[in-house]
Image (cartoon, rainbow, N blue to C red; front, side, top):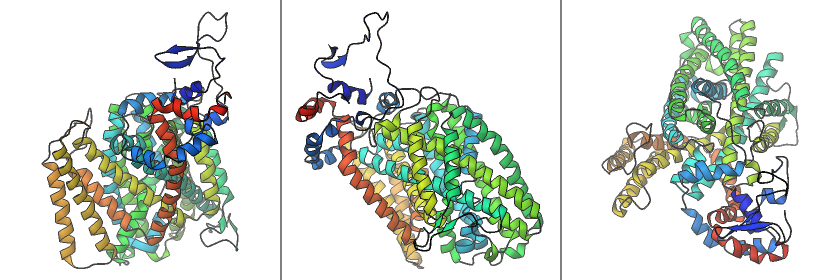
Length: 617
């Protein structure tokens, strides 16, 4: 029985047919007197009652909710460090979906899902913007730095996905290792990442399509003079393409995967064409000056082009639907990301050799670049294939984002209605609709540069937390790790994070002396070395990150450094979004998760709302 179902049974009227099992009230299994077999009544998928959205006793009625609000400090304290278990994530929470997702993905599918989700999500849309405004020809170094950081994060994701093959991805991993509250922060950022990332793809798709028709990326947008800059170009085409891609993803995982790898193979051929033609028609003189904006521009661009590498977590998110996750996920994640990092660097180099960085088009860089060297026909080919790449990114992104949302809903951090899996398609349609509608609204109003900075901040934060979670997983096991070892581990972790922040602050303030960087670098090394000397409390079950704690510690440092390279506006937007998330958590999320974690207190909570207990919702 699901947790939501248990809440509903506690609210069943006294005159209903029921029996007592293990001290709990459950419905009688027989639905009719003449039925040869007893079974639970089947619930329709398309239902929209209050009980489906807020089944927790704290939301049973206004009296129950006021009582819950009066216990906010106690509940916050309880949930702050409460950790989930692998069994809960893999077994118990899955019951909330009522129907199973179908295990239909193989290693082949995962490799191309990785390729389809990553390639096209940023290389065609962000490269031009960052080459012209921040990095110049050194954009190749920006991609190399971001690629290394992404690969370190891929290692962390892979170990977790093999050990805990569930749809929740980083949300479930963080909930198991860092606790409920940190998982909520991650969940909120995951949803923000999903919405902003999809909206950014929709805007990029619109820009490329407009550039094919007319050399004006804003050709199909509607300008509203009275709106603020960055929000004044309405994009109805982005809305339409997002709705179509997400709608197809809802029809079935296998069907979407087949369409993805067929399209991705075509895109791979075009990428080879771009690189070869770029080198043939490129001029090394266009690479001078190589650092027009200095090293600071390279790192600012690296923080933003990180968006081009996002999407690999979508592959980890498909673990629940993978036939052999212990074998296929490492191949799909590590293999595809290594290849993509090399491809991105070559594509960036080809672009800057074809076109002087001052003449690179911000919105449709590659299409306009081919037009500039006289290959007008190639401009259309690249534009069409860029559209294909972004379309597959939307398809795979829709699949992964909805799986994130499903697990978040299974944990009741958002209404569990969004966790329901359709019995025929095997897909979480409600979760997909949530991300689709919100991203469509955002894509209609918001410009690409505003979206990319917010997206990068959320993504880098989650990847940094994943590295922390991996260290916690290796060095701390509840009721096993000695307190003295735990204290030493926490001290070392604090030194690693603190030194990373220190180096980032020095860089952001344009400190040129070597003393500060030497001190912070030495502290980072000593903190990591201290962890390396501690005994590990847990080893990976099948596949593990190599060189722990050095790899995750380096991932922490690089992600924090890239976060610090983002502009002030990204920080302000992130703070505002986080404030809204915390308000939701205090007034909704903490009470729902508290009810789930303390079923023994359900009867007393429901008793306080007894006046409405006779109504079956």
